[in-house]
Length: 118
Image (cartoon, rainbow, N blue to C red; front, side, top):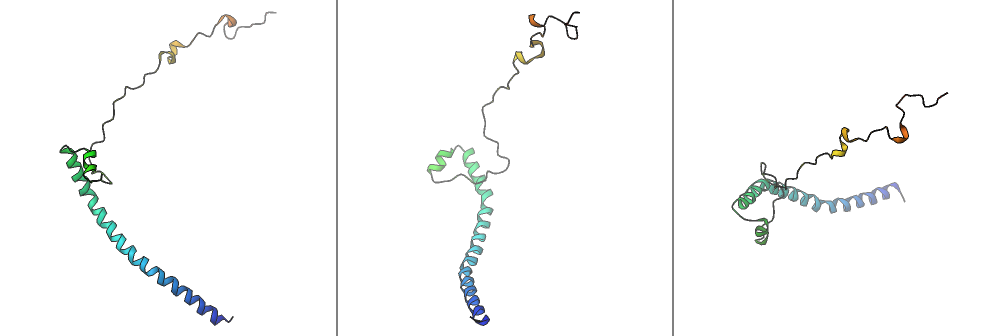
């Protein structure tokens, strides 16, 4: 096979590949535009959803009506209320006063005392 034939085959393969990418590139542009439009609606949709909740609608009721929760909640919305739990206190046994004495019956000699009598 000559170099010219190899180059012609390569160009034909590249042309087929280029032809396949054209619709994808066009759709990509349309998709990007739609995503921009959706992003522009996210904030007002979240605010309207929060307003509906503030007016007394529950998430369940809105879902039954076919209204989905927003992807992002509007800024400044209070966090959901979590039950308040009491802080854990340290147990009395962990305090230094509750540490058992070190001079048990097996260690009657004070520290540093010579235990070997000579």
